[in-house]
Length: 475
Ligand code: BG6
Image 1 (cartoon, rainbow, N blue to C red):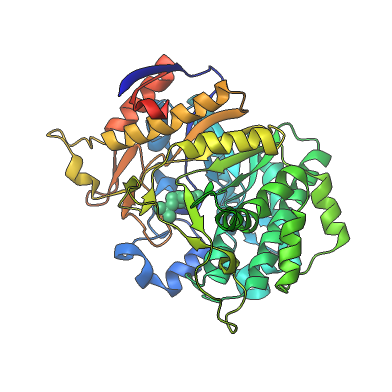
Image 2: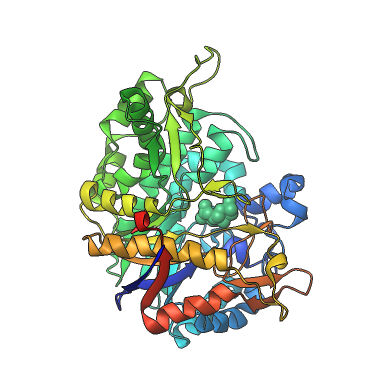
């Protein structure tokens, strides 16, 4: 181990992220304003850890001024959250803005600016209105694409003067993968065609919203926030390499390529045709995707993903699933975050950075999420009650180091944003794993308290330097 000090460039983002539904709580929510998450929580509460969920969340909607003061104390340059589509409107068909909710966003944005923190807004972080899922089947419907574009138009009209960095989605692949591909979440339906239809419609929606933003002449950028899993094959053998390539097509390139290059990979289209995955698209939609690329990409990176060639035959009656071509592989001896069950390998940041540089035209991008969810963090409190989360400091330091190293090697990496600013609600895991720089004390009216990592994060901003101890092989 040896000590390394790296300079953090002045324009490099040092921020943190969250989403509306994971923080705001239901205070002030009107009947009929449920999101997909709210409906899932209401229908299937027993899968949410200890019964916590979006209802209480962190009560950010009432406490945002206190939280923005803490953002400033922790040294954040940027804060990313979402607008909750299901609450921003009272009527999704006629796009009637909920004035009360919009006013809250005006105040939040003003408060961020007043404290020198740049807001970044995402238009959908899974907050599809539940009514549109019930009525139209959600993102399976072209009508919902149109309603989303009209919602975006209202959001831009209201806030585009004050917010210049916009994102169409956060992790657009997640909901349909959990619901339609793997049937792990409510309303539990295995349907590979629906999975691909949702993927396609979200790509189409991104293109349409970019077009709208540019046609209206707003100042600023529109990007998307993706979660490509850096996927390593078990071995260098062709069968393992093929498994990794196919995984990459189905789960990473299905969003990266249309967003940045304006097209689906030909190999992915061929695989969908081979397996008769039924999805509906047309020339006009492909043209829109081809003509409207993102300005920047946020990338959420938490863990490496490893695969090997499948070792068993596919049952003939099992519907097609991309796992026909791969099996997950666990590297013996891997470093783990046992609370979340995710491998820790900071090199994913460097490897993704090189991929963005070499395969995606060095488009501007940043780490939109990276972080460490830990169970029972109260056990790490010192005598004064402050959580001594040195493991989080090490985790951030090692990943940030890889980003800075990649930038020195020519990657167009614009910054690092931690997930999350405060502890908040995860899908199902709720408050089980704590991610925040700031503790939310559920036993004490959701009191906020800086963790050791928050004070350390502040020093990064003040000194514009990262100092850490590294194994020689990590340098
Ligand atoms: C990302 C999401 O997948 O990871 C967040 O954008 C999520 O919404 C975060 O909370 C951490 O994952 P999890 O499942 O532990 O909450």
